[in-house]
Length: 292
Image 1 (cartoon, rainbow, N blue to C red):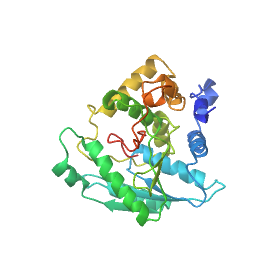
Image 2 (image 1 turned 135 degrees about the horizontal axis):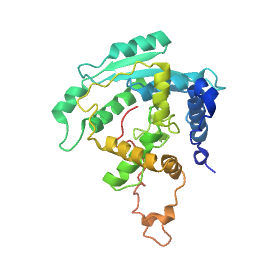
Image 3 (image 1 turned 180 degrees about the horizontal axis):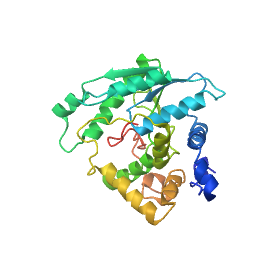
């Protein structure tokens, strides 16, 4: 049985003593991330990992937990915090620089003109988030080689996986999500998502507990509640409130796929074969995929 099938629902604390003690969030997150690393072979001895640091809560949590595990892991690996400054006025890059310096992280901040490129060339019907994600991803791929990193870690969590699953079905007509490990199309970079078993509300509590200096990307779409991903987040929250545990069930479904119970003829007995040389589409970096 897949380890994913054994993901625990948050346990209810009992009594005043438990409430006073509070949850050990680092232990919880480290256990979830460690399980993902083991299940999918995300980290190996000698890895040098570029950690995409947007300044949001997810990237802070990812870097913090990976560093916690690095100090205790039986294998040796390195972390390099990398921030892509997209060029939006108001982006508080100084807060990130101060944080990296205080914590002693190796870091690199790449200043770009992504904001200008988006304003000049964004295709009709596209969004700031989708185009920005593609451009930032290209920058991260380039920087990975320059910084001698063989893997790129992004801060996508379990809720991101479910939102992408629904968006893919509702708007793209396909069943896919974000894989925990992905060989990029350039054939050189490997993308990993160590937070794939961690829920967003756990990250939010962890961020409050640790006091991370969270900053906004300062782009025009920041806080836009009309975006498709925000709508999926709202839908999932409503379903979870009405049917507790439904998100956990959806996450388990990503590792419990019955291919011969779908409509794709490539997987049905006696169905039409796929055209010669036609690849089976995987959950590669989609246009609606945000950076962590």
